[in-house]
Image (cartoon, rainbow, N blue to C red; front, side, top):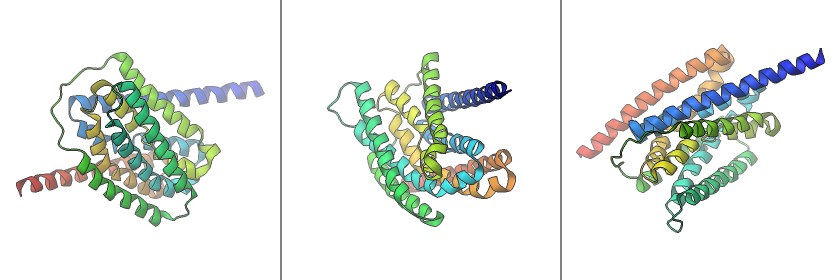
Length: 283
């Protein structure tokens, strides 16, 4: 009887791991192809939807409970500031010209940006703040970053539309899946605060940047970062909606409502952004 329960538990765990990996593959493949075939900015904007963060929060809630996740939401919101820092650091390090080897440059950019995320995340972990203060931290970093990113990145150039091999597609999804498994797997060990911070890690954006940096050099990924710098505000909407709708309607229905609100928000946010850009050009 005991061995039967263990086998059932192992089977359920294996199924959950497989679901995480499959979802990760589908998401990252779609994002990379949109970025290359349609527009890198649209790819970055879609990355602002609660895809990687949403999957992390969903599975943490499924495995640890909604109350556990809600306790970590303020640190998740503040942790978005660490994600912004991650992107800026990656962009700056990738512009260093002392290394002509693209793989070494990608490795260096990745290591330093990930280290920056966890160092800043550690300071966030040590802080004591409420939901309002967490929002204030994020919005301050958000607007400072917009000023910096508009100085660093100009209008995207036209690029060719290369195709991807099956191996490249699988590697993208597996990378996201591994990150997702780590974040959700350690949630019960590190506690709700660190779980919230880790959920804000750009788990979908990071592999997308790696893929585009490796395949296209610096042609595309900076504009993905540019788009994400704006659309990350959608993740703030996601966290706030989670606090209200999931306790009220449950995990599954609550997430459907949250995603609907985030899509509407991102649509109108994009419309306003385009309008402002056209107005600026006409002046």
